[in-house]
Image (cartoon, rainbow, N blue to C red; front, top):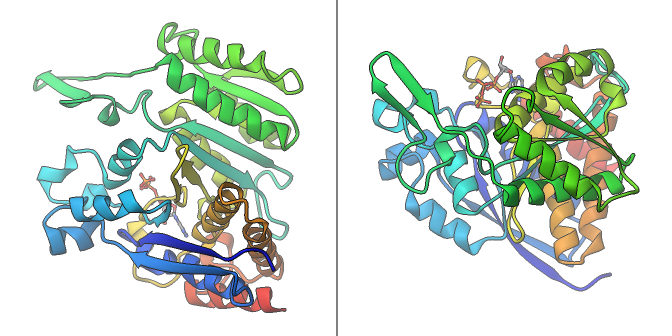
Length: 359
Ligand code: ATP
């Protein structure tokens, strides 16, 4: 038995399918840790999105942010900002606000095809490392004011920002991660057109690559990379990308691996960590009880592994591996939600994962 560890983890269910899939994380982690009295997790439920609009009058209340300030880790559900009343639609989304406020600069998005799923690329096992704080998403690029504006009703402009510091730290994340895997990093860019912004991203990543001689590096134009991924996703190990390219690529890689409903992600700063499925609120299937909770479950396993490393508590890493193995077993047995071609409900899938951990 290792030394006791007490953790307080936030749970923010969010919008759309969020309240159906986010509780899966809590259920599965509690079940996985049931036999470990040395790890105690207290869950702290917090409001964002529509729930927060009705309780606090805003989708991203300061009350929620103040509690997050005190926490090291939380699980963020999706936000359906397109459905918010007009006054919030032009503002930074709850997810964007949280990433910006806590400088969660690294978004780690694995895409691995599970045996038994009809993946486009059944052998793929890659990770998209997405820069999370700047780039071509203008909404988070300003200290004050909006990064998107319209000088006339017929002209819209957006400000992209790329800094050497942000490129350096995300490149280090990618190369450190590659060292623990197949030792290959691909830099996604468009420096042939955006020679200064994307050019600085490419140049800085290549400079950082020199410090990791054991890792092979190459670079691809973002459009060519999208095509190569469809053809040969299994050839890639770690892909590092600026914010918008990384967001788009990781939806593509998630779907190539079987379903975006399987694609997990972790957002980190030096001190905080946030689990968040790659998918959005999926309003088209919200409330039907058929959403795939895999991405949330696997994101929370990533969170546990990260907390285990930060607190030097190896049991958390082993618990994360048990959760991942249980998900893989259940999907391998053909217990799948509709997005994977199965008939399992969200609740039925969660029950099967919990049962697989017990067996
Ligand atoms: P965002 O901009 O927030 O990423 P989006 O509108 O681009 O959101 P999603 O909400 O991720 O996209 O939905 C894209 C498609 O994938 C929808 O058809 C949705 O039903 C499906 N989908 C997303 N997540 C899941 C899930 N967990 N289970 C099943 N299907 C899902």
